[in-house]
Amino acid sequence: MNQPKVTQSVPAVVRPTHISVTFKIVTPDQKRRINFTLSRLSDSQNDSWSVMFELDERADTTQDFQLVIQLQVDVDHNDNTKAAATAKNGLDSDQHAQALVAADTAKDAKKGDATIDDAKQDAAGVASARSDGSPA
Picture 1 (cartoon, rainbow, N blue to C red):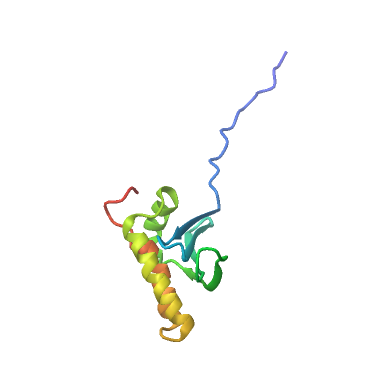
Picture 2 (cartoon, helix red, strand yellow):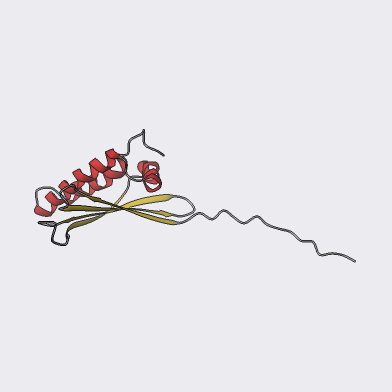
């Protein structure tokens, strides 16, 4: 009697096509909050990363935060490795410092003292500011 041949296939490795991680920074005086969301989209050819950068402020700590500005920017493809390390390991101290700089530039852009392009460049710069000594 012939037995049917049974073949087993190894399941393909499943790789997520979208990852999104949000970091919140609240300044020591509790009056500014930065929401930094790093997102990865993947297709069969490439990964691309983007940043949603939001600055919220309040006059005093008894009030709710109010949106000042929100920016959506693409991360330079040369910084994909740093963006991936950030998504995996969190912001390092250099990136934290750059986020504070980006918040100042974003507020200046809202007031007309800087351009939106300046603000977007500084927001995207949070990913590229990652120290080479930080976990990969």
